[in-house]
Image 1 (cartoon, rainbow, N blue to C red):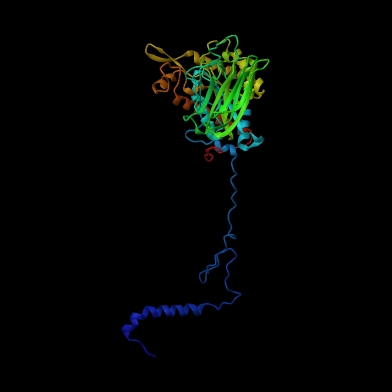
Image 2: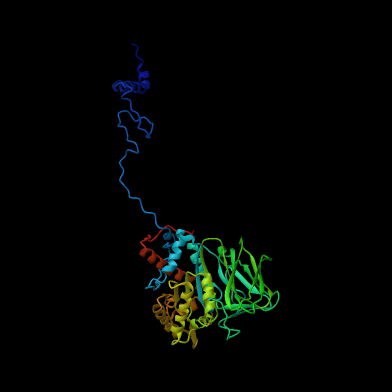
Length: 478
């Protein structure tokens, strides 16, 4: 055998050792046959395992601990998100008799698509602080984000006061068209007002009231596909036309043997429109119009009247008031009055009559929520002090709600009580008269009311056996 020189051996030594190790490993292995050859299990990796190693079991064959699947939350839980905005409020709704259950049933049916329900309607009655649609508008947006925007709702035909306005739909009228409200009556002995406390008369040929989609509110509520006109049918009634985008779509006759409230519905293409009610034969009496879209959701009617209280509400003709409420089919009626209430001895009786009429129109299970009045102040030697009458009125409201078995929310205490008026004034949320509040204030208070409603909704769901986690995944609505 020929041996390489010593120097060559050292240079090729590593290669020789590698060859010898390979031969040794090959000789130490047993001969393989087809019966003993390793085959991967079905579904396992086809990669050949390392020599001498045990075959690894497939993923299907591995033993895994049994994990109980987490139950999927109820659809209603998506709208009870607990965030910094939606935390549980300090002031909760008092509803010992479950009066709000009918409203919550309607919301639940809306979410679960039961009985083909498309709309849940809320009526928000208020005084001068509600005549500019700030309070109702923010509540409309709060509920719309959670349950869907169903449309803007009811608007009077014309302005009984110059500052009357709405967020998503604007209204104005021509000469010969005059609006009145129940608190400033044109005919004190003939209070033929609708359920919103307003009526407008067209006394001149071609006089009109007009409604236009605005650009200042919730965009989802500026579009509509349905216009529901509420008008007075009476022996002296004339005739008016409904124009949509300058085209005549309906001719309405308003003459009847007896005074009654009627409605006419016009359907249009979904979108922003211009609607005009034009007199063709005098005299025409119109209460207002409601604007809704084709979507599923909540509609909040802002029914604000300057200086409104339960005394003036019960002065509306009972048949017209009940007919208007029944036509709108409200699921919840909110009564936010008291600032203009100065008859403590008569207050419970007037409120009882108004609640009776609401139940006559909507049924004995109608959901009614009474709010205490807001704090308002007075100037005293250059300083601000809360008016003591509102604190007493808040207690009256609580007693009225309990006596009539309706729900109650303490708006007065949610603001912070009697002396909180100083804080609201210094923070710039109230005007100099210490009675009327600015838009940011209404946004804060309607969020507090909305959170109180959602807290009570959670209680209702718990009674129905529907449990919701404290922090379900956030949703933007259906």
